[in-house]
Length: 252
Length: 224
Image 1 (cartoon, each protein chain N blue to C red):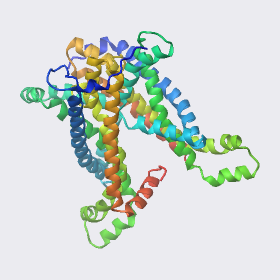
Image 2: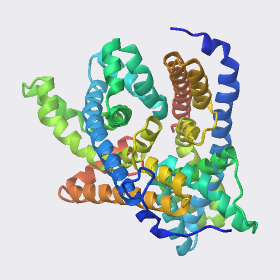
Image 3: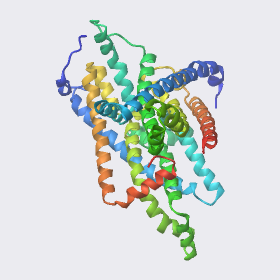
Image 4: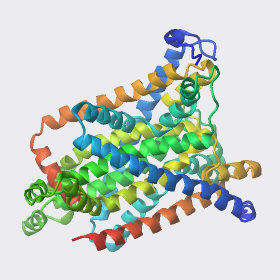
């Protein structure tokens, strides 16, 4: 085998004639993190709302919640991204569609929204599991004290349920970071896209993909460490998380 | 909306495209399950060094994107194969074979974790009781632990295969014509993405919805 090892390839100037490959890869890491953060915000906001719909006493709202989860979970992320990127602008009024297609940050916004809404389906299921894991008498006691249903949810149920969500957030965020790579198919220049670009130009396959792998491992290690540190501040969470996981039928 | 590109290419889309997706899913789920069982056995009962090795393999592969794993195998295997067969030049590998290997190895990690959790979920006391009754280690595994572990994890294993069915769409980055690849080809020829991608989404939705309902039925049946 005549593979030419060269770890200094990262200092070479890339095809754009100005920046080094190392610089490009780091820019890719930046876009990966930005997309992941933006999607996480969307996933949490929409996901918690979906979780609340799923436990509503209103049949219509429950149906709405489960339809959302079904649709966004049963279509591959790649197809969802294509739909947001290629289909939705066509279906909007022409001027609005053209404006969206002309946006320079189009791939970033589209990938973030698509990924956020995709992950929201899973966050919604976890929220529902967290809410139903809480003892039912808390709700009854709250109502008996004269609180309205929304007050019970806001003041008693959600503060506990959100805490229960924290442990599952780790795997959710790791998933989101991994899934940002699907954004490369609609032109988002995140880490995998940058690595592919560098591999194509230099043929230093091993060095390039090793760097990208190290990048993802580093990002995910940061997430795991951060959430663990956060959890350590609230020891009771772990205990309760075990209860939730048992309620979900997962090993504690 | 113009539906003729879909109706006139229906056999290409469904037989060539969706056919490849289904074929990859079934082959990789099977190979992944077999390999996952092996990895789980090593992680549970193997020597300490092998346990650590498998744990690293599983954890690293599970924390990097599937697209990156696809690239790793597709672009690096020509060099590895050349090295193995002592060829002076890189050997070009077929994208299909490469995807097949990648998905099998990748799914094995997930199956390994699911099976391991299932085995650990069977109460330890049963194992001790079986040993006390005079069964050998292998017998305990085969007739006490595994049947229960499989019943507990069976539905989850099938759900994982449904996830794989969706993940196979990522072979798009290797320019394979799976279902999404075939749809993209036709949509680009006709320069009309809207009906085609909606059709693709609908088919995925239908297939996944029906199979998820099936798994739920199975889960109800298996529940003790």
